[in-house]
Image (cartoon, rainbow over all chains, first blue to last red):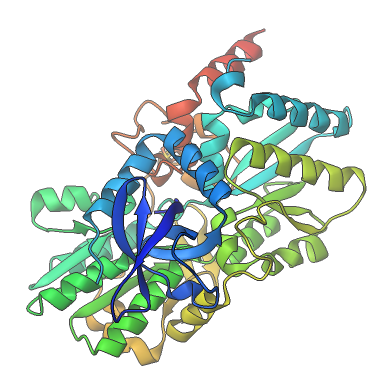
Length: 90
Length: 375
Ligand code: SF4
């Protein structure tokens, strides 16, 4: 819950500008991007995702560094990814 | 040093370590508090204390949101979950937090069905799909998660949902830091500011720490090098006789935070006059509740709550650990009666809790401490 996990924006969601599809460690899920609506997000951008919301925009280098750090955490990251896998926001 | 090759940039870490050591005046003791549980986790996992000279101590702060939820609130949540037609939902981290009568998991083994969700939006989606259920979301966390609850409430209101409720337990970090600064138990020399919370609130709210208390603050990232570099920046300020708020984690944290997130919180929630923090007691203006405009979504108003204050178990010393007065292993039940499998206190529940982090990663250091104290 406290982990921010990096996701790459890979798709938009029809008629729901608040939502976007991200790819996080091979998991493809919808998240809410409304908190970054002042940021001019584009496909291919990376964001840090907290409990289903993109909270900050980050560089790709930062995203890779965070991912490798998170993988080193083991269980807490696995738990977060599993929770994300179950997620189905609309 | 055993940990040296456990993370990529060990060479840079060693270089930072020696710069830190050069700034440390012999005979002076330095105590820095890392406010955030994520930092505690990194510090123990990578044995960062082993990189520091002996006169620099890291003190673990109260920034683990599940650790500070008092027993009575867990009991209230279970009470709501027992009402007819209610589906209580919660982040997974909350499930093992003990209340006066066991945790959510214990309660589910008896007669409830408290369900784990990844996001409050998942709880909202369930409410939308199952109009016959009253879906309650157990909202916890600092300013990192409060915006997600706020945005979900705004959405629920816009959709006109009548069967979605929030049990608000959001806490705010600044009053907790202030309580620690005002407590006579502890003398600190500076703070590592929380990374993700600051993504939302920015760096300005910490300015009072430098201005009114004369202590430096460095907002820090979560990787081992981030933490060492932030300690270096704190030491640099002290050695130059400065104290200011600095942002080591600028690649993620904007100086002014996230204005949209802050606005969403203000639109939906307001400060409570006081709130009980587990181990720390009541702290003034330290938590959020729903605004009147959202009363129809407010589980505290819709459901009758017992609202009983439940004293922490006598053997539990989480309060001292959360304030940084005791190190985890100094608690009498640490690692014996209290383990991650059978937590007595909350600091042992979450991987960000100081006791759990220490239990999982700190044993080698502890051995060394023992050896050192024998020598
Ligand atoms: S060992 Fe258990 S009871 Fe003692 S402070 Fe840690 S979590 Fe609390």
